[in-house]
Length: 382
Ligand code: ADP
Image (cartoon, rainbow, N blue to C red):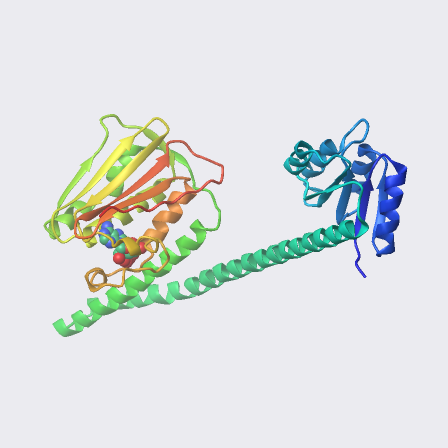
């Protein structure tokens, strides 16, 4: 026995009563409305599974009623079937345009009406079930994500202190006067513990960055910011015999950003550029436009294979080829860059060619943005 609550809206009492008894005989609960206003009022009071709507009614016609049903978020999804004596194609097109799910022409045939009613109610219910399932799954995912973040935070904090102690102990050991061999071993301890500490700090920062907290915006001189972010990199580039150049706009600009975060973004990109370049140059180009400013880090290094581009911003992802793997890295640098750029509502764009080099260009709004639109793109050229 089918079930469901149906609203029949028609100004002709005779039509209403025919439909009413036909549907009630099948087990449906039926409400009647003699005009559009009554139909809308009833729709606000009951959770209908379907509306059977007459096209031509005085004062408010079926098209307008349907439009209002579809404009209200509470009733928008309820299926509406038009019933009309008019077989005009224009009326049918209009009915579908205002959101009808079906159109039945009078004189009505009981079997046809019942079949359509059954189908649309069943579709509507399945759709609602799917939506509820999706909402429940989304809640579950959110809860899991939250649990995962809590876990990462807890584990990271618990690891940070012992690692700090290991590093201090290694430092104290050095003071005791070590043989060369012992000193080399202590260096290994320091390097590995330092690496773990960096990884843990990066993970903690990433958890914070992706938790939805907005940047700590402050007006900053772009020139000073860039200079501060690049301290030490010229020397690093020199050690690898790479040329290093910074191109700043002639006039300084004041930008609203979280200073440390943007320093870090630039630091990560330049550090990668130096790491993954064996010869040639690393350049930083800074440009200012009316609403945005951009920082491009260009290298003449390994480049990135096209098929790797979708993954390089993923947490822990490192290109699985020896040329890239011979460099130390956690695979968190670009994930942090992406998170910071998104947090600032900016974009990051990559142009790369294997064997020729890469350019990572970050574009950020000059003024703090508070809406939630994010964007990240990757492009390549070969
Ligand atoms: P990592 O700590 O490994 O450097 P990142 O998240 O910073 O991690 O970068 C992810 C991967 O993307 C790197 O392991 C490397 O394979 C690749 N990559 C990043 N920057 C460059 C670059 N400038 N040139 C070539 N490959 C790069």
